[in-house]
Every structure is written in C-alpha cells, then in structure tokens.
Length: 299
Picture (cartoon, rainbow, N blue to C red):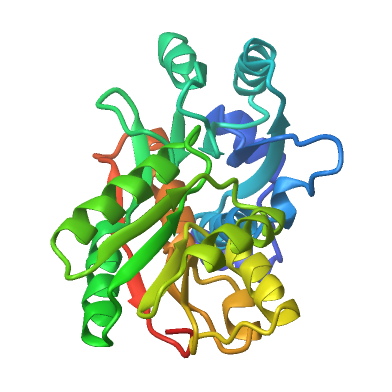
C-alpha cells in the first residue's frame, strides 16, 4: 500500500538518505596499479577493462556502483588511503586485480579487517579470491596439437612476478608431460608485443618441421605475427602459433589465432557478487573458473 502511494505521488528514494540510514555507500572500488612513463594505462589493457566492464554491469544489478581507484607501488600509502575511504563511507569494499606475488596489501587489509576480494592473484584461506584455472584449456590444447601432428612446442612465459603467470607455466608443464609433444624451449616474456617480436628470431632459427609456439598472452603473439609477416614466414605452414586470453586481436590477426579463452567477464562478475555477499553477511567462498581452448586457423 505504501509503495502504491509512493508511486502515485512520484516519490523517488534519496540515495544520500539511504546511505546515511544504512551507514553504507553502496559503492565498490576497483583498484589497479597506476602505471607511469610510456606504458599504456591498465584500463586500456583488455584484461582489466573486461573485468571492470563486468563489474559495472553486475554491481548495477545489485544497486551498487563502481569507483576506479588507482594505487602506486607505495602500498603503505594506498592501504592508509583505502582505510580512510572505508572509514568515511566513500566505498564499502574493494576488488583488486593485478597484485604481484610479493604484494603486502592483502595481509595488511586482513589485519585492519577491511573487506576486499582479489582477482587473478595468489589465493589464501584468509581472504576471498577469484581465479581462472588454465589446466583444462591447456590439456585440450595439447590434445588438439597432438591430433594435428605437432611434435614440439616453444613456450614463451608471462611475467613471473604475477600469480597467473606462474599458474600458466605450471599448467602448461603438467599438460605437456601428459601429451605427445616435447618442449622445444622455454623463453622468458613480459606480455608485450615488443617481446613477441623480439623472441621471434630465436624461435625461428631453432624451429623444426612439426613445431609450434605458445605465447602466454595474445599481445606477444601479435608481435610474433608481425615478425613473421615481415620475414615471409608462413603461419601455420612453417610454424603453428597459439596464444592466451582470446583478445579481440586474436580474430583480427590472419590467420585467426588459436588461443585459450580467459573468462574475464565471469571473473569480474564473480568478484562483485563475492564482495557484496560479504558486505551483506551472506555465506561466501573463493571461486575458480575453468578456461577453454579455442581452435582457429593458426595451427
């Protein structure tokens, strides 16, 4: 009856009054490291932008909004700043993406009893996390490669300062062990196009018939493609190429890149729901989402 009267009189709830009455802001922070210098900002990277997009959509469904909150390598300053944000009810909690393995932020937030969720970072029993499991896709990838007659594979790693890069390597090596292929070589990488371009000569001079190369993200694969184009190396005629992430670039490349699909949208949505459930005192638990392999014309 009250709702009918409110609708008839055109009543609109005051969000500020709602926040005061509940002592909550109904706002979530998405924290990413602020990059300086010549590097592109993190939100320009498809990994972060896809997670953010999913967070905004999912938060809206639950009457929350999302605030992008950058932080620098000065973690102590950020923790203090975030403590103030929560204390003054500017945000209710935070979702982190891109924390390094050595980051001390989670342990400090636990000590201060502040609500947070981490995405793509090392899980722990003391806090909530959302991660992708690369092994199912790796196993599927090796099955496809074996069925197509590939004999050896080069592996270009990601930045091993990050948990997901280490997990990628572990899953790759585990799936390789159970496959018909042999490791042609493991090469350090940093996720950049420049890296993919730079490692191409080393790989191509060592390649044999029946070889392929796996890059830990699609960006490095695009650099490798560029080198092959400039030097008239046929893909997949002379070497098969695979990536990881399933960025838009995977479909723009010719031939289209075979890649591991990283469930970024699902990860962003899960992170929001975990955090809001925590804030609303509901039962929660960390989430691990399996990956899948997408076969295209590069192998």
